[in-house]
Amino acid sequence: MIHSDLHIHSEYSYDAVLPLATILEKAKERGYRQVGVTDHLNLPNNKFIGCLSESAKHVLEAKKTNPILLLGVELTPIEKPFYDFNRQNPTSEGYSPAGYTPPNLLAGESSYPLEMALSKEELMAYGVQYAVAAAHGYIDVPHPDVRDKMATIAAWERMQLYLAADERTTILGHPYYHGLQIWYDDFSVIPYSTHEELAAALVENGKYLEMNVDMLVHPKTTELFRHQYAEYMRFMFEKGVRITYGSDSHGGYGDQRPLIYPYLEKAGFKDGDFSELDPADLWQ
Ligand SMILES: [Zn+2]
Ligand SMILES: [Zn+2]
Image (cartoon, rainbow, N blue to C red; front, side, top):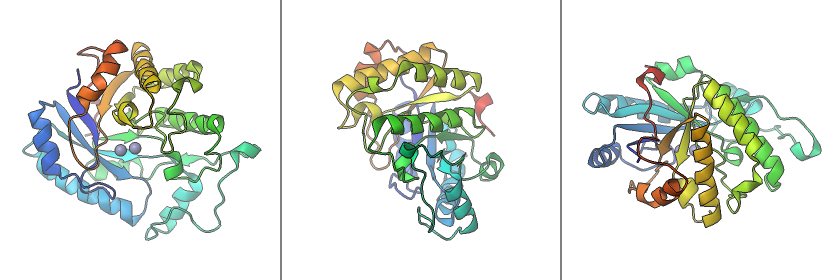
């Protein structure tokens, strides 16, 4: 059913150890048509740009003899004060510039505008061909509302709609991933009206949506959640959204596809429903 993996972190990402050689070896074993390295580029500082630079150098070299290999990047929305701080202080590796107070959404304070680390032109100068852009929330921005489910969901929706409209997003990564798993028991807490809105934005802007393996294997996800999430993916597919697969591997590169097939099949997915990236959607 799945013939490509478009979200993988290599040894060149700040948080991953997976050798590029292993990624290529396994991708060939599995007969993948496309395999994409998407190392993290969270902030516009020297730490992350250094990782992008290393990732690009090695992936572009390996691409010469491995045409299935793609150079991607994983972007995350960050609030404007963080973006400005990191642009002005590129040697800082911190997430919390002094004097920055995140808005208290529960008290009705409005959010800051969102940004992402580099412009599309800057990414293309590194040879980047596409981006997985995904909300991570508390990892990048200390949201004060993280224990309030509905406020956090609203923050996610805002970030996901921003990503669906942004020119840098090729694939909207791991929708409703949450680092603290606060809704991993019952996905129905997120109303279908919001899925309709996101699907329409993705279709209108020609974006792909990622089926991230973590959402169906994470130990904190319930069986109920996994079936609901697979059904959500099917709903988005039936709305016309193209679905890609992402293993989001950081360490080992075992084949997790067989673990998620039962959920996807039950939701109605069959061979041919998952997409590779259309060459016309690659930046270069
Ligand atoms: Zn991610
Ligand atoms: Zn990732």
